Every structure is written in structure tokens, then in C-alpha cells.
Image (cartoon, rainbow, N blue to C red; front, top):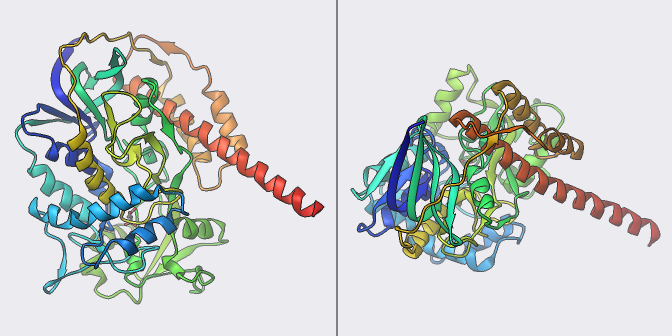
Length: 479
Ligand code: SIN
């Protein structure tokens, strides 16, 4: 098999906003390689609809901070939330200096609203196509010291003397070794592990596995967010929460509001809406009759509904997998517990989301913490020995892999059953391994390992929830 060798100062794994923000802010004296598993535009950031939350127009970041903490169920780290919202105040101006043009109503910014925000503070571009426009603009600004390689799968991180010194994988089908002075994981979340998701299919938790295998600490893996409104058709599409911010209401088939019990109604925190919709008997719709200028403000949604023959006035929706709050444990500058390895964006557990991420805080997180990582990266000596161990992968057919994917889809849900998790873990416990690596087998192996990490975490959480329920019941009988 042919081998490609690269030697760089910084290797960034990923191509979404977290990766691009780091690349844009690293010193231009560094030689940077940014690798993307598919085409760069197939990142979750490119699909972002709602926009970027920021208190740019408010007298202070206090209200944004409170909304973020409350949505997190007070489980976010207050100091990190403060960093996010306070440093996030300048994000809008920063992005404009890079050429991003936010939507306006006349002279004023056209800020939108989403669930659990106390006011309108979501900046968007091109209506519901924020991600596509922001990413295209920023990628055009990448300086010459940044090389972008598409169709690169990284399957292993290399460690020398306790410090990450590079990575191996595939460029297309060619084996690739990258020796690097520092490695930044920006691989995104886990949504692509199953079909019923708002995420790109290629986003399959690779960074969790890469980090875990070099001994990095992972935290809060069972904190997984489900978005209340994916279009209820065969292939899932996100229906942005900004639509509810613009007046759309969640109703049942008779037109009755399904969130009437909550003081914030259809704009309640995302986890609460998703749980209510999951328990609801019968179909749920977004009634958009009160949304003004829907075609102009939500062009992508209108085109998607047209494509599926759906009446835009009454859109069928159901919850689906959306975001991973847990991930690789990092400090405030994205350092993991292993020297030379950084993590940023959804792959990282930055501590700002707690149990439930506030809407449109994720692009903000990528920008704020991407800048912090770029400022913190220390490039280690590149000339260190670079020893690559022999790689082994699971030897399983594409058919068997797709059966395992279906099993993952059964438990990676808002209400997982312990029996489904246990079966998956048993079935994938001792899979045959081979040293005859191929890109296909490497990709499948990463996905299954990521799913197993999550399965263990979700099972522990479900088991302890169950234990708490039993204790509460017993206590209530005997008191
Ligand atoms: C949405 O537009 O509803 C998703 C935004 C987000 O997840 O932050």
C-alpha cells in the first residue's frame, strides 16, 4: 500500500466552524493542515439554520448568561458560560470583519429568537441558511499557511513520550501519516451514528475514539440533545427553532397547542419540548399561520417542504438526535488531559451546555473557544521520533455494520431501553479483528467504538436514574 507523509506544525481534524476558527486565528508563521473526512462543505456547521446567539446588542451579557445556565439545568460551569457569553459579545463584529453580512430589517439587525431565550438575540445570514453563508465566507479567508485536504479519514493519533505527535489515516484510499507539533480535534458530534438525526452522516464521534485511545479523559458522554422538530418524512431535515421564534406553534392534529402546559409554550427549552413531543400520542405539526414573510425568512425550509409536497402552513414534525453536550474534557483553552492534544466545538465538553444546550450557542462556542485554542496552542518539537504502531480494525462486512447501525438507532434515542443497549454491547463485544486495514473498515471501526463508548455511558446514567426512581418510590412508601 502506498504511503503519504506530511510534516506540519498544527494538524486540525475537522472542517466546521470550530476547525476554521482555529485555522483563521493561529499565527500565520505556522504551517497548518486542516483535514476533512468528506468535502469541507459536509460539516454540521454548514447546515446550521437558526444562527449565532450573542448579546452584542444588549447592555450586558447577563441575560444571555442566565438563559444559558437555566437551559443547562444549572449543570453548566458558570465561569465557562461567562466566557462564552462575554467573549461572544464581540463575535458578531469579529465575523463582520471577516466578511460575514448578517441579515437586517432596514438598518437594524434582524435578530431572531429560539427556545429558552428571554429575548431576540439570534443573528442570522440568508434567513435559515446561516451556516452555509458563514462557512463559505470564512473558508474564503483562510490564509496561505493553511492547507485544506478533503476526503481524509484520521483513524489513530500517535503519541511520543506522553505527547501527541501526529496522526495516521487515509487520504482517499492512500495511507497517510501526519507528523505534527500539535493536534486539534474538531470532529463534531455523534449524530451521524444513526439515521434519525439532524446531522451530516459523516459526523460519527471519531474524535471521542481518537482521544480515548491516547488516554484523554472523556466526560458527560450521556448528555445528548434531541431537537424537537425534524421534518417527519422519510429522510430527516431540521426544522429550525427560529420558526417557533417567529410565531409558529406546535399543535396536535386538531390544532390544539401541545405545549400549552409550559409558561414558554412552544418556545420552552429544547429538551422539555422534545420529551413532550416524544410522549405525545399522535402526530404533531408546526402551525405557521402566524409567521410573517415565511418564504423570505425561511427559504431553505420552504424549498424542502415543496420538495416533499408538504403544506408549509402545517408542517409535520418529530424529535431527532441533534447535539452532544459531553465529549473530550478540556480546560478553558481547549487543552485535553493529554499533552499536544486540543479539542474544540461539539467534540469537546467545554462545560458551557450542561444537561441541555441553549439554542444557537453552538456556533458561538466554536468561535469563542476556537479563538482561545488558537491562542493557546503550543507547537512541540516536530523532529521527535514518530513511531506508528500496527493498526488493527474490526473485520465486519458492510451488511453486518449496517445491522449494528440499526441497533444503535434503537437505543440512541430520547428514552433508551437498557435491554437494547445491553444487546448492542453484547453483540459488538468481541468482534473479529484484522491487520488488513482499509478505509471502509477503519470508518466502520471508529463508528462502532464511538457507539460503544456512548452505550456504556448511557447505560450507567439510565441505571442510576432507575436506582434513584426505586429509592424515591421506597422512600415514599416508608415515610
Ligand atoms: C435550530 O435552528 O433549531 C438549531 C439551532 C441550534 O441547534 O442551535
